[in-house]
Image 1: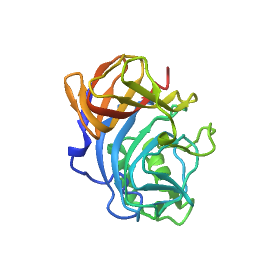
Image 2 (image 1 turned 60 degrees about the vertical axis):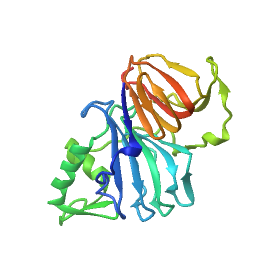
Image 3 (image 1 turned 90 degrees about the vertical axis):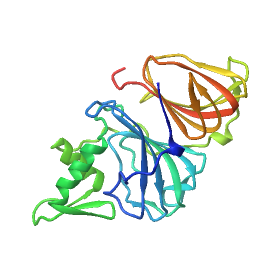
Length: 280
């Protein structure tokens, strides 16, 4: 088990320098194994309303949990504070333009196709290499060439630079992103006293499960080990995970097979993202 307290971490450099718009900053919470089809990255993102990204898609999956503000994901469509959006691989979205200044928990991870996800170091290296041959502007990469294709979506250009080959997208299992509203769901009593759950989203194509949990003061929730990666983000309250402290904006990583007991001192609430291996 790993725990970080995101509220206490300093904001770091932007991880989307290939996009456009203002002072984006990130906190890198947890990362997977580079080169694995199960690679992932969980970050907290601070995005100004000036941030811009054109309509595009990814050969991996991502989840955006809006903590504050609202995220534009298409013309007139936003992920509001408290909402969670799932962006399946190959599904178009955007442009991202306007909205409000926002703070977001962002998980990016390899999709069902097995194409994987490119981590920060490889992405930055590819951006530096491409900058010698062209420029990034408005979320688009333009090659300084007189023949052949010149313009690419910035992420596509980086992906091609890393992989050294053509980018093929898997047929999209979902046509559009799915925006979930946990506040509209009722709590259901769990099997333990003082514990309740909201079944927020289940996506069989990837095996992704999103749940929200609450534990009343003094109650305990035993999280049993299973075969999946689980990432938990505390939205309110205080308590412990094993012997470690939990507080608002604590993030917990349980590797496959790991379990832990949560005990609440003040009403404890968190969102749990459960992601199986692509090969499982």
